[in-house]
Image 1 (cartoon, each protein chain N blue to C red):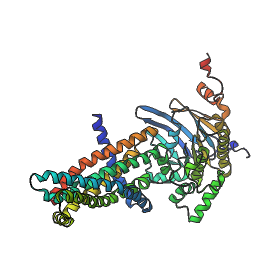
Image 2 (cartoon, rainbow over the protein chains, first blue to last red):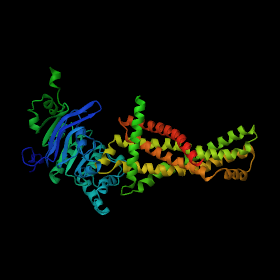
Image 3 (spheres, rainbow over the protein chains, first blue to last red):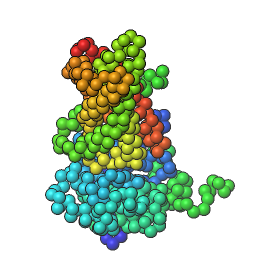
Image 4 (spheres, each protein chain N blue to C red):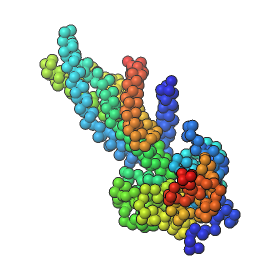
Length: 266
Length: 252
């Protein structure tokens, strides 16, 4: 299986989904974000969630680890209902599902090393020596060896995201949620992040859910693509299938930023 | 009507946050390091404004009493009045107002920035509790720092009062201190220090509450900072009256 995108984990291929959203509803005041969002994620796959700005892509993954609460419907992770869990029960979910935040969300007052040790300490990883080893290991994985003593203010945007990723994978999660991992990065860093997503899937077999509107990144890393449109998941399928989708918006969106919209031409 | 609703909702939010903070103190592991850090940051670094405020307040109080009481032939009592005014009222209240402005706004800005940069979400996502990590150490540091700063304010304020009384009334330091000693009782100290414990709690919890409820990016952080200062000042002034009434009823 050289190309990790050829992972045999698509619907119907066997395994049960590890994450399911069914009929999820969410609103912020009068603004309705989701009316009936339904989606399944299968073990080992990389699923990308696409959608325009403000459609609630990040809201969807934040609801999965209980950072935001769904107003209705069901969200299950590893067979357990997340929407009913208190903060204590969510701890187990958050150990198994890690999240890379859009800006990296590193703690400014801590060094890179202390940032990565933060989840290790919370989850009682082991002795100081073991934690130091783990920090070295994950920093090596994201291509930033030797940066332990740096402060987040000394890092570029791309480096912050890579340290954020190192912190997310430190406790060996089974699922990683990426919130706009390539937004605001230069092409070299975009490729580097894409490469990391692919190699984590290939080497560690992690399941990934990527929220983005970067089409290049989407086609590079995804096994399947889900599209948010009109307050629900309007489409789920492979990259090829997006081009034959009967919803024109999906076809237009996945064509990327090139050219103009058909409706603007006519 | 909207203002009243916001007031009620904020009061409810602060009550919930207070309860969760209270339980977070006792949940293991109890971490001393962050409390010491905040004590240094919020408490020890506030000593200079405390000293400055108390010194000049004591001085101006003595000046006004000395001049005002002269026409009644009572300027010899200046020391007694300055001591009572500083220890029971102005020491704790002015210290709280100034520290509230300095520290409360700092908490709101710091936590507000952490909210808008998703760092508070990150703390939760990494399996930790933001109330235990961020709110509890700050509130505890304020509760410990305010009485200590108030003691400093009391001493410096009375000293400032002495300098001016000596100049205006022509008394000796010994006479002044005898007056202070005869006037002040343990009750007066408890009155002032008791209030300062509550003031510390209000400053900490309001700063954290406002910071954690920041919305709207960097603009929201600015608004939170202002809101923290105003809310904490109003709370301190109103609670000062309520607490004084209670303390007077209990101790006289």
